[in-house]
Image (cartoon, rainbow, N blue to C red; front, top):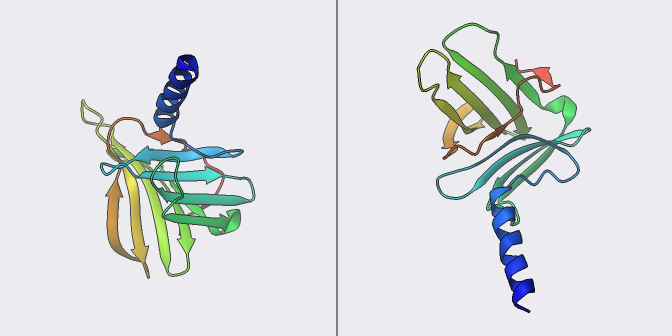
Length: 146
């Protein structure tokens, strides 16, 4: 009985460290916020999926859009900031999931998170916290953001 309990505890510890849940699809982006919420973008082939909420729980926000409706911003190789983003539209709301790094600073400070836009106006930004950011936005096969 003790072995089963111990194995369950170990499995739970590993599950909380690997919080990406893009089951059967590719993780494009994933991170945790300072309030313990997860921001995640998954490439499911025909759809690009966005979710926000507690890891391993039912997402507070979940959006699946046809691949043709999502778009990306890819760094052009100029400027002091390396930046990438994926836009996931949902009616009048767009979830702009972003990652950037100041390539000229010694620390190469990273900023990442999601900008929430309604009618193309910024309503709020939720930033990632910590260093456990999964960023596979670079080179994602989506149309360019207009």
